[in-house]
Image (tube, rainbow, N blue to C red):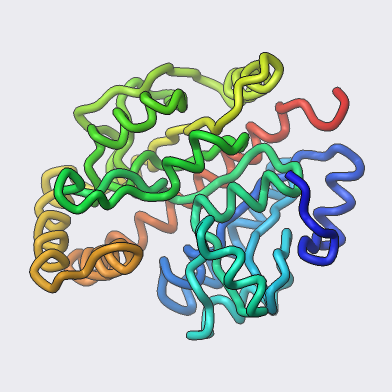
Length: 308
């Protein structure tokens, strides 16, 4: 993907890693600006970066700052994203607007995949991916994350599909678009707050090395598109399935009753879930994000880089 040099700015740490073919892990910024409250958002972002460094890779948190795509942020920039109200939520459709108007933007899963691909980064660690929303047969509310996974060559390490969504329809959409869903040490699709769901992954692979080999093989045979690496939330952080399901059902119904849809729906529902669980969902979210960062770094360390 060609992009003007003055639009894409790599931090010194990331640029050095790319030039020396060191492993790099992309990180989104929507989780900082729109996914968690302050100060947990900034604390978690910095801790996740350190976990990636401790596991042999370089972190590249991605955002748009003053209309520039920044690949790798300073602590000051992360703190700004965590506290400012002047940060747009940026997916594919939003990038030209935020860049051309020189605004600030926090990248979603889709937005981060695009920017990571521009910088030649193969692995991206996040919380959970978006998907087909409940009731999408009426609303057509389907996350842009799924379309991006169909065409952008980045592997996304996540705790499965956000459990506020329709997991079955999301898997059908991914299958239609040829996006493989790999279970890291699991046959069952994890559902963000819980380690399992009634649905199965496409393939189970039991080590970061095996997953890296899968990613490299897919690229070597010329198949475009991403890979979902479903990495279950650690047992100590997981919530009871029946408990969280009833709370999510309540939150989804409240969003419907208030006609909250589109890109406003997910933040509203997640905030409502956090309130109803008395903060337990936030603790789970932080735990799974950190775990995904560690596994993402381990996968990136085993992937081929540059001309290998």
